[in-house]
Image 1 (tube, rainbow, N blue to C red):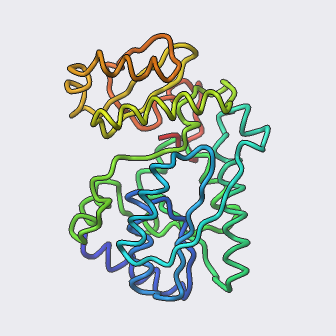
Image 2 (image 1 turned 90 degrees about the vertical axis):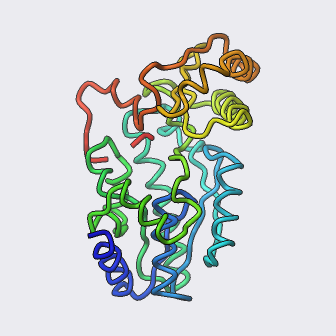
Length: 274
């Protein structure tokens, strides 16, 4: 079954002729970029967006992965924080971010004679609140993993089979996803979260989020790391307080992709915060 899906993915990509991949260095977009480069060769370009809502660590990881796998890589800057609609942090915040990004990517593709823009949306994404999907549709972005029915667990398994270094990489997300909807996004707030999460990575934690609730940092940790985080609680608390928070709490439910979507009364399941 998995081999058939991968064959379908390669066939779908081959039929496109040329493609620009919205590449972040995460498990999904890395698989798309790997398969697209394999079948399209020089007619494929991986495009990495850098901005203030991404961490330097994520960008460097993406560059290393691209170099290791031989991707044709190009980088562009995006400026989400210049959009007042994004800064207000409404439930459709991701729509404004993705609109700018896909619009820019479409411009780059056109300038280079590339017909299609691809993203890494997968078959699990349709069940979550993902306003960015609307922007993808508006800009004609192709989602090949979604089209062939690949789910996240299958993408990890397939990536492992293909010996991709991202197969077990923790899920990533824009730093703005750490703030409840309606709480304005500020440079200071982003820096506080960025510093806290960098310190926790230094402590060895892998899959986690520092959710910002005013002076309280609510730490979500992957189920397999919750006990470890509790054992390190003194160091964890100190690291997060040093970043600027007053109080630290560990969420007993652990890490959940899009947990802040629980606050939406009537979520639009068209498209996440992870």
